[in-house]
Length: 284
Image 1 (cartoon, rainbow, N blue to C red):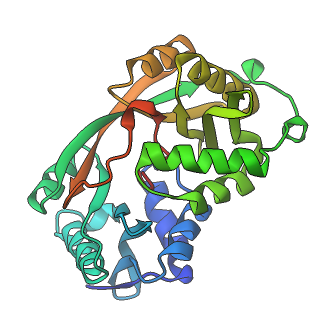
Image 2 (image 1 turned 90 degrees about the vertical axis):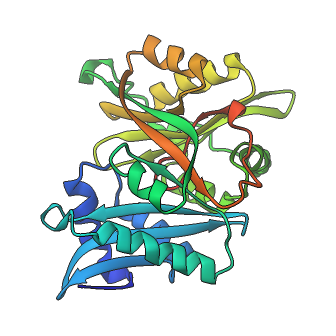
């Protein structure tokens, strides 16, 4: 068993692990990690078989994100996940990134705690299952794309709410699913925005940011009309009860909880009060 840097040729193996675990990631999500952090993604191999993965991505050198921590079910309880995590921490320490964040499942949380991660806040996953006859049939091409001016305002809002600039990720989401990228505002001022991804089994709403309840409800309404998938996933902050109430009113059901955790100084916590939903546990 050895650990090495992940390459593009390993993406099918990584996708196999994430799919087997029931995750919603696609090849595009793995590509985003490797494009931004080619030396910060790792695989564990048994011979030539990839049996584990872990990936990192840095945001403006303010903090790094750790995601895609996966181990083949046949190889679990052998410390492989911990070894991969230690490798990501070693890589980020060497890169002089003192703050690391991740979203932990209940099973993974004790491992992260032992490695020095502390709780920041809780996240709830909500899932909507729709019948085919209730889904909008409007053509995505009919939706007006975001303007460059709107994008700049969105990037600034996201930086404030998230804590660091990640326009490279938001632009990739916009390029891949422009019909799921939207903004609401008044008099040329953006008051909220939402992006979406076409995942393996569901469309995912996030990041989803709004400065008022009216803006939040309008974004959710529009997203539901633009998505053509039967299943929609949203990871919202547990503290955002207004968002939870809106999701429940639209038929979403609570699925699971996650814990956002941080290792090192949390100098740039962002503004979670304006964050209705995160991009996803793999990206923050």
